[in-house]
Image (cartoon, rainbow, N blue to C red; front, side, top):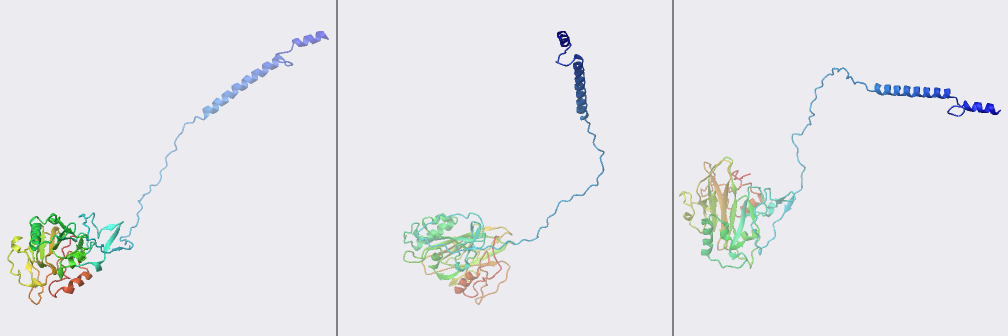
Length: 373
């Protein structure tokens, strides 16, 4: 038994209970299997590297493309907006306001994009506190030569008043001449210069200075400044009468001196008009000025000085004659001339003018206007 056992133990291979031939067979098959798997994997990877061949192009029909068009309305009306009505500024006779130039154009200025439309019912013969026609307004500044800038009474004499007016004109209408004197607390805007005879105390009151024991309505004046233009041009001259001062300057030249207290030759060599001082206007004879010419569509500066010396009555009649025009005549034979204006006169202002205006002394409804815009 022992001999048999030993013989069998010698014939055993690497793995217990398996012969060597079997193991060799398994190894060979494993090697072949690995080699075959590697070959197949390589073939699969290589097969994926295909070359792209683009398809044959086909002809397609072309389409004419057009830009879309949006229909627009020819006219578009904005929605109506409410307007703010501004009343006259409160009276402040004890304050001297600085001369602030207009910032921006527009009808009556504006706050927050809204127009400040004047109440025409409150407009005076001297103007209103707000613009009524943008770019066509004459701006009026009030000066009292009876008081200094602090309101102290200067006891100004007639000679001192006249001297100050002459100095103003001789120094190229420079408002600095009036710097030592009292200036009204507010400016007024007007599109016409035509003041029939009224009480002199109304002038200061319209500029925010109520008449009373603290203010004597004498020795004062108003300086108006603006621009005029005629689309077709033309040749014109002024007729007028001022109690006590009415001077008009156009484009740097004095063209009318209709003042009650000054001799006209001092300010311009008169043309010797035959109509001069021939007709009554208000309570005195009308003066006739020199001809001046306006080029078509060219705006020029114009200034007017109105003043009152001793108190009582004040007026500033300013009429315009256009060369070549024919006018109706009133009972005394004087032509009924258009009132000077740069826009249509508001009806409430017309009513105030008519209250003291003698019929036939001026045409309030004429089409003749010197508007710039």
